[in-house]
Image (cartoon, rainbow, N blue to C red; front, side, top):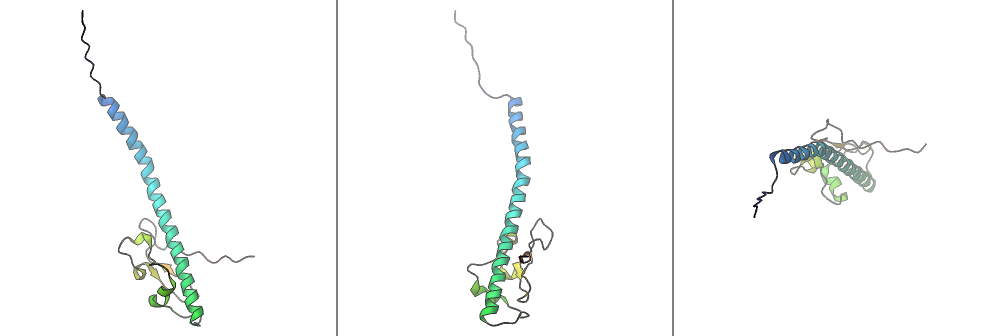
Length: 132
């Protein structure tokens, strides 16, 4: 006697729903962390850009014998910067002029953008560390 046992292999609807629920749970955990990591990365990159700009302003003032109240413009500082410097939170269309404001030599440059998901002026160059 022959018995034909036909067994169809596949996933049941419940198994597929469980897998989809697990993937959804993992995505719900990962996406906010990705956004937060991107924000932190943009903030750190912008602060490093502000450091480069401040160094360029100081070098310009030293080489051209400017007073501390001198106001540099973009054209004065750009030759001292190696690459094009823009705030990463500004997106593709950001330029130096739309990203940063140059103040006097004694004042720190300021980011105009401050982050898309953050409060304005969160990209701030910290004060210089003075040893006690």
